[in-house]
Image 1: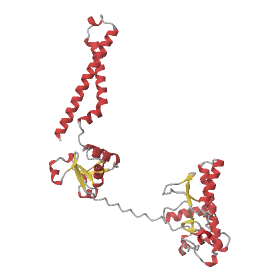
Image 2 (image 1 turned 90 degrees about the vertical axis):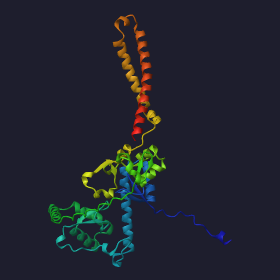
Image 3 (image 1 turned 30 degrees about the vertical axis):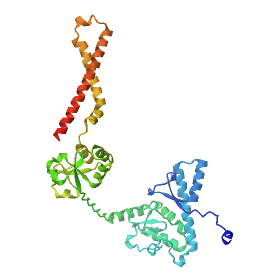
Image 4 (image 1 turned 60 degrees about the vertical axis):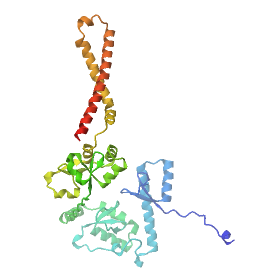
Length: 373
């Protein structure tokens, strides 16, 4: 009975999720590109309703979204100023005492540029987010002095900083350029080169793996060396030409090192003299060591080419037969229709014979290549 008397709360919870927005639409990817705008869900829905009515282009939608986000941020700043006045010395959220609004001794660094955003000097030394403003230490201290006097509210500090930049006098611009020239930023530290993985390589010949003791029985050009990951792809797709073909479709066409025709791990390249190391493309390396196809596979691959070649040869031979072989003493007694029929019969019969001969020669070439291996 007590459970029946309990009232269930049917009121919807307020929507506070931030939605990434850019180029006039919601971003569904997990990684967001630069200059992404973050909107409250209610603001996003209102923007989409306005889009349906007015049919705004994407750039106008982004401009409206930026204004909405800026308004929400300013509204939040005003609420924080009301809740936590300056006299209470309370730092809200992620702001630490190091980022508190305070003056910095500028002395001779009066014209040093500092990154400024959301009323604070940012901590980042590089990769500054969009909207970062670069002002001098003198301009920053002037802003903080005006803020402490109550002349500028906190949510307008960024706007005033932008106005200061636009209103710089030529002499101040020259002084800033001179300071930057005399105090260039430090050179970035060279990135450590990523150490190559010392992959273990497995020898493969035709359609099987071989033991290390069998390597000496083959020429280096006959052995295909694969890493464990590459070998797994071959095995999972059926060992042989099918597996290597599947590997060709997924492998990246990077360069790999060879020494005397044998693939070596990238981590061991420095163990060999540079003149002995040869680099080839991965796909070309796999193709050069693929097993010889069967006769049926070769013929099926070349069937259309064989028919086209036989037809071309037969037509040219029939034309020359009519022109060069049939004598005039005979041709003058034949009508043009009879000569054309003679030419077509000759071309058809010759084409059939040529196809059989080409099939046989192609199978012989395959047999000889197989015997060589």
